[in-house]
Image (tube, rainbow, N blue to C red; front, side):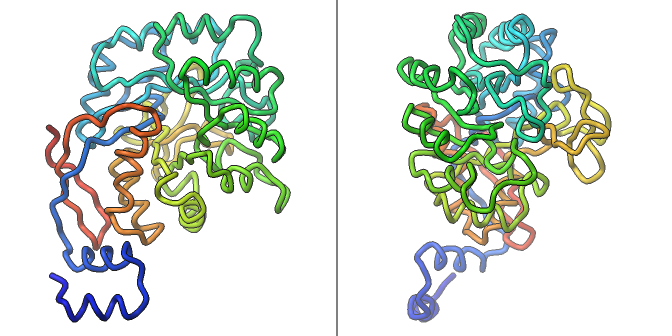
Length: 353
């Protein structure tokens, strides 16, 4: 317990209130934490279940939901990546057959993204396409109206008018898998985009130093930033700098988890893609440099974020609970109890109610 003398010494040292709370908490090496259930806005699959497989059954999704629940996740968006209309529709219908409350909707990541190598990430070039005609309407109809978030690249022809339409319909729009100019990012924000999908990923390896779309998104107060904090997608220093730039109030932790999450190293499927989980926890298409989702769980993302940023747990937890809930316009669900080890930065869920 922090004494009054210690408290005054910390205040006298000019520490911010959050730093004071962090130091006080760090003195307790093992603490029991109670918080709202975790919310993940980007889940391609989990525990051997692939949401991008049209043959996935409600029972299989229920299995993935229970596996996520064991890590503290009580609500999530099932993410469907770029795919032709027929395959996307089949996957959307398969996911929509699951009627559990944990499924808060669908995140449609593509196909309205950049076709360029690097920016496209692991999405297949043949699956990328601009919006046209009633393409989105047909996808939304197949999903039973459950698409809640759409990731687009601002530079794709027709995307700006689509953003305006989606916003009018109450659907959130994120910027991702892009090679946009700073002005094109700004145009997307003006049209109504409000999030950056896995900021710092889904882009070319080499960018101009200063005028580029990462800086533009970091500086845009209108955008919250989704970050994959698994140690593979972003270096520790990058996570620290990005959280400082966006602030904790505009940072959301996501996993981009695939069917490999919660499974041993080996080969798995992400839709039509064969991906490999290696011994380091990295998921990629064999023989290619691009990452292809992750094997991350949200409880581990919380611990990693505390370790990478130096922020107290109390500042990081909202990034995986109330902030994504507020962004999506939904309520948190359930309560979790967890052990927090300040030495190892392990956040271990012990009970979900």
